[in-house]
Image (cartoon, rainbow, N blue to C red; front, side, top):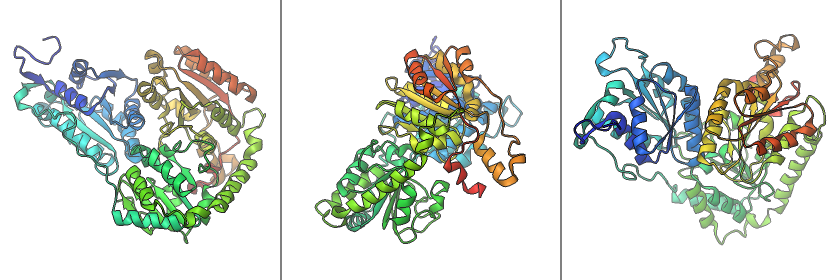
Length: 564
């Protein structure tokens, strides 16, 4: 048969087609891949199952795109790569998904079982390499087990906090055909249980009581608020109990800009003065000063999907393991009718924080409005923030320039912010654009790149052109890896601050034009807004090359502990 699913016996099915059927049962609509001889039977199966095969120019892009697709859709992403260098190229994308708690499956090829340990083409111990950075890594031992193992891998993606899985499939396992009756093909929706835990009821009651009686509470809404699609519950909680909210990671956009409970610039002040601090879906890692930035006198509550994260690096007063959305909803319900405690007297606290926000804003206002050339990065990210619409998905890919944007850019809707996550991986931008634009074709996608970050995966700009996926891209170009340069200047002095971190003056606008996209160069800050609008109107993948001041550093860069 031309489709490869059977030979003379219609009851035979190949390993690649079994994989495709399992992907279909999971709801996978697209796989990201770079072709290789080990994996082509999966492509053939995907054609039969109606799964789109998107071919990219580097396997790191495929893995990042699968990660990005999972983040934006709430469904697991999938990348398929060949053996050896194909799989090792994808390691960075898998590692990034691991630290970002993003559910995705990477399928890697492998030499045939019959050539095991013989030195077959591209043979490497993939499972051994992937085990430390996945929730599950295994070899598919037999063709009849192919679909079963795919469903097993997806199941493991959701054990505790989400994360990636890896399957290695030998070439002869994929190509062989077995009777359908011998193969276990899990049915859609019937091989995974709900992982939505509402937490310990006694702990819920205790947290409700704490928040009702707190005088100066604060809450940090992290990525798991979006992961669990708990936005509505989070918003209801902060508004009902009158709690100032800070957002990070994918939690940005939970509250819209201008909401009276939306705070951004006063987080350190709040965490130093609050009496109750609730941290939702965010570990006490480097972004939180390993928990040391929280007042030692505050009552600290941590909510997380992963038991291992709760209380790690810092003692807490209350820990609740479970689904952020369900837990926050339960807390609001438990506090119902009891908001006449501290919750009814918080105007002074909210005003105090708003004043701290205003002080921080006024301090940087000259830079936000600066007409200097080279352009101050604050002016660039301010223009980008003004450019965003309610439908704009914002993606940040870079070091210092994205650190600037984290203080200024405010997504206007939940699920409209994407960044690498705690691994700090450069190069996620183009693959995230690919995933976001495919998953949400009606949404505008706006991406800010550092010039160093863009260089890592920028050739897949051509993939966006090839698939006709328009987006507005901006390169903050200072011809430097500036976040590292700052640290070198601090450690070794100005005479050695330019060692190994200086790039050429690359015209990324011309690069975009060469590949069939829209490109424009900006030197004058007054031209940023008009250039962005022209990029939007072009209907093409675009890069606006903005020359920014190489001697301006983000406060977050200057405050990094590694440079102290």
